[in-house]
Structure formats: C-alpha cells, structure tokens
Length: 616
Image (cartoon, rainbow, N blue to C red; front, side, top):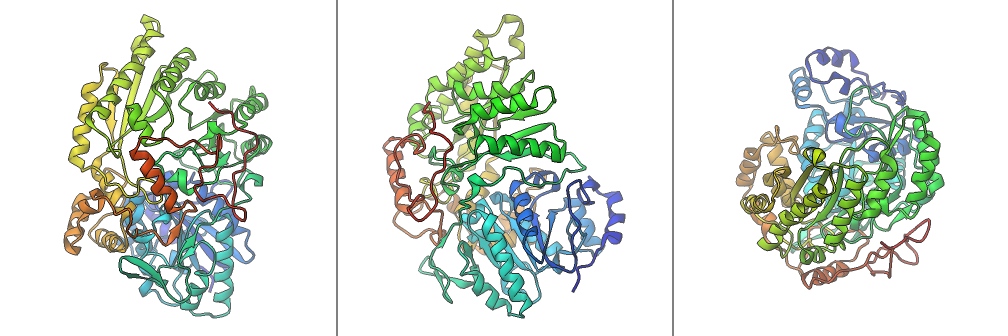
C-alpha cells in the first residue's frame, strides 16, 4: 500500500511551534520519494538542528537510496512543543521528504549517537504509532533497526529494536534492507525475517537471545558473538556524499568531509578509539577533490575535515597546502576540529585559520603526568606548554583545555594538578603577550566526569558519585591562580545516567522504558532532563542506579556486552587495564609496533595509511 502524505494536516501546526523550518523538508539537495516503493526512514533521535549534519544519517540514506526498489527518507525528533502538538491533534510523527507517517514505512532505522538519547527512541516510536517494543509488534509493523556508537552495548536499547547493526553501516544497511524487502515481498512472517537477519554479519536480534546465569545465550541458530562490520572500502571511497542544505541554522552548519576513520592512540577511557579501529586514511587527492565537489554542490563557505584525529593524517600538511592553493581568494574557510596537543597541531591550525583567530582547543585529559600515563594519553606537560607558546605566537588569544575528573586511580593531588597546569599555561600566554593586549586573553578549563565505557580498558571501573565530582571540581577552581581562567564542568547527574546506560544490561532497558512512561525525554537537554522521572522509575523497578554507575565490575565475570565484538579482544583490554594500574603506556601502533589488540588479521580489516606517519 502506498504511503500517504499528511502535509495538509501538519502545515497548520507550524504556525504555533518553535522553528517550523525543522519540519518542512524540501531542502536543497533533497529528493522526491516514491510512496509506492519499499519505504525506509532514517531517524536521528534529537532535533533537526543537531541531527541534520550527522554524517551517519547522510551516508546511510544515500546507501539505502541506491538499493533497487527502496525509497529512503529522513526524520528527526520533533521538538517538545511539536511532539505535544502532534498528540493534541491526533497526528503521527512523519518523514521529511514525503510527510508520511512513520508507521507506514516498511523499515525504520534509528542511529544511537549517545546514551542520553534512549528515552527519545520510545518517544519517536510512540509518536510514529509503532509499538514501542519488539515483543508486541504485529506482522505489518515496520522492522525497527538501530546502530551507531551506543550499539556496542545494545542491551539498554534492546527492547525497542527488532535488530541492531554492530559496526559500520555502508555495506550492512543495504544488505539488511534488501533482505527485508525480498522477504516481505514473498510474504514471509516477521519471525522468519528476524531469524534471517540474525545470519547477516554484524546484526544482533535481541529477541533471539535470553539471559542465563548472567550471560546472554543465543537461540534459533543466532551467533554466540556478533562481530562488528568494517567498511574495508573506506579508504578508496569518495569523501563527498550528496547532502541537503538546510533552510534553518543548524549546529555544525558546514560541509563535512571525513578524512580518516579510526584512531590507534589508545587512550584507555576512549570508546571511539577502540570500536572504530583499524585506522583507514583517504588519500590527499581524494580529500581535496571531495572538498571541491562538496563546495560546488552545496555552496558552503566553511569546510570541516572530520575524524577522531585529523592532524594525525599522514598527508595532512599536503592536504591543507593543496586546499589553500585551490581555495585562495574564494572566501572558503577550512577548519580542523581535532588538534594534536603539540606545536605541530598548532601549525596545522594556523595553516587554515587565515585572518580568523577564534579559540584553540587542547585535551590533556589529566593534570599530572602519572595520571596521563595511566590513561595512556602519551603527552607531556612540555607538549602542552609548547603548543600554548606556538598558539600565542601565531596570534591566538583564547585557549580551551579539556580534562576529566574521576579517572581510575585519581587522587586529590592529580586533581589539583589540573589547576596548576592551567595556571602555568596561562602564565605563558601572558608572558608572550604585550601588556596592552593581556586583557583579551581567555582560558576555559572544561571538566567532564569520567564515564566507564564498554569495550575499553576501563570498562570494569566505577564512576565517582555526583557529590564527589562537585568536590573535585572545586579543588580545580581553588588551584587556578588567574581570574581570566574559567572552570566549567559537566553536570554530574547526567553523567551518572550516562554510566548507567553505558554499562547496564537488559534490566536497564526496562528502566529506560519506565522513565519514558514517567515523562523522561530529551535527557541531554538541561531544560528537559527530569531527575524525578528517572528516580521514580528506578524505585518502581527496584533498580539501584548508583550501584550500576559506581560499583566496579568483576574482571573475570561476564559483561552485559560480551555477546558483541568490537574486534578488540577482551584479553587485550584486560592487559591494558593492568598496564594502566602500573602506569605503563602503550605506543600508537600506526607509529610503532603492533599492539596485538586483535582488530587486524590476515583475513580481516587492516590499517591503511597513505604514507608512513611521522612520529612526533
């Protein structure tokens, strides 16, 4: 049956909601959907302004659109006012391109960018008139699939999804959509489709696993461990993806070109650095050509070269030199969002700044060298000071420093070192600045509470309680010696919820559902976060959120995500934990010897560098 268009019903609501441009669609670069084709809707679980630039949504819509017989559309979480208006008027959540109700699609996909989006998933399903859990869906309901960074511990999300794709989706999404399209066309029952999906590499079907003795056991021939998918063709693929140009101002409203994927620096707290291995670089020629195509196709005047560690690209100096030559006089600005914490990182930032000197951001992560060795940051105090000197000499007057508090083995002395380090860095800024300009100097010290993440060496560690996080933040404030240094820190209550979601099992899936029923949504938004809803849900279910977040896990016991493989072995993570507690660092394997993490193998993915990387 063809999908309907409900634009005539939606249009009157736009006069009374904030930012109606979120919902009109028809942006430059969007396509006209085919309502009679197999329908797939890709959804970002937050507002349009946050999700429009998401590269996963853009890439996967493009890949889905290339599947024969499939028409792909987008949707974003409606703002709270629009969600309430839809309910008040008895209207469903809808897609952008065709203004079609979500429940009329054959398949919907929801990306999982961070832990605090969990209740939004239930809000989306309910608004879209799709039963919120897989166990009550009927034959004709859409197949609901998920994926993204948070899929590597899928259990807190597991009740909402029929299938969860583990790893990169460039190849798995078309494969999964083709299977669902063909099986639905043949009249196959829903249960058979789910069993077939479980046989697709990288696809986790929660209904086919049950909890036994603390571990999830597969049924109906489902794999014991779901291995992540890696897009091995990334290095040779174009960095330019067809994209829409929004009508409303968005966060990161610019052209994004992904220059490399993965990071091997091995920071022991960093989940992205583990789950996106191995490192794969696109060539300088590919990147420059992609930027030029993107500018021509969108008209953007700012381009961001994105990755986890852009200045680590083996050809980054050549890339920036070539782009500057090609774009000279055009007014187009190139930005490098991730600077190395050394003078080379500043040099690369200087190469693209032109006359614009906003602020530079560095991430020492820990104040003391001892703790930086524990977390395998592999930078020294002198690295930071040399970067600050280079920044001031190049004309920067604002610097932001990122740190974490609550890292494993952290002491009050380590915390105080954050303030001392920031003070010393600011002293250097003052010394290198003429007296008449010193009033313009600013430094921000941003503190985040450590959140233990699945598939990292610190996955077994606990998180400090909120009151302890506030105490340690105060230590940092007291240790700074200049009023121009501003100390900010992330609200520890939401950090606790992140930890619960990051390390929880299927019991947390019930908690999320209950919190949503009690009004939780937009948990990442300070103005919407409801501590009361979560506390009431935890009390009703007998869930101790503090214990889930703060108690260490047994290194020798089962973990809620053991049935999902990131490619990095549990043995390697345990070894890295031991090395952390001993203060022993591990070298980045793209600069030195293989660290034997388990990702690269003769028959599997491997590191792909365009040139040998120069060791700093």
